[in-house]
Image (cartoon, rainbow, N blue to C red; front, top):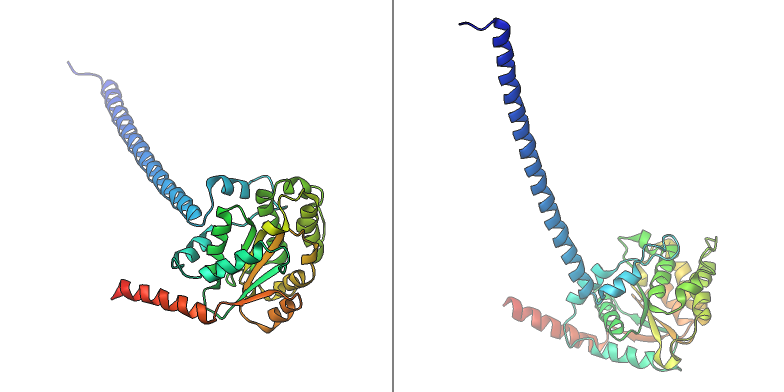
Length: 301
């Protein structure tokens, strides 16, 4: 018995619909599997990146707790600490164990001497290892909770060293390293000015003057500014002005380490303050360079 044509058509349509649904389900399942694989791969990449970032922070001397305190998300626009862990970790890798000890010993004696100058200036030519010494010094200070704040200038990143950005970053770090600083900062942080000296007073000097001294001048906290000569041209003059005229506004338990090349403009500003000057390119530094080259030669010969 022959089915009516319309019944045949309906049956064919049903088969086609069922086939289409199965095909669509298969495509959907393949899509879900592909998406799940993609998410797993992204998660692996993210996890690997997270592990890399964590390892880099620790190589730079930052504990997870310190990193969290430094980079709190509730201080935007007021006191945002810049992350220098990459450059610090990179420079530390270039430090040869046993070298630069004369620099670190000299800085430590200066740090605990209440009669020493407010500013320690580490000066030397290009490639003499000033930033390597600064990074290693910072990690040693962090290890004993003797670091107040730090800034590593790079000529390839001028926006990060604009005076206002630099000062707000230092303030963000002081929120993490000096008890009571963040509360004191809330009283002055809403300053509306582009004048660098007024920003310095509001973001750094006044809050530091307001907190209870956590230590004496014979156990000072150290603030490091590396590579002054790499500051943007329009930032160099105001920053040098702060270093030469405003440091007297800081409490006796805060001292500054600055590194730079021996450039006339910097020398004129810092020599006016009679800083302690130590040349990285003197005889002892040449001994360190020879030691470094000897190790390098043994690795490649």
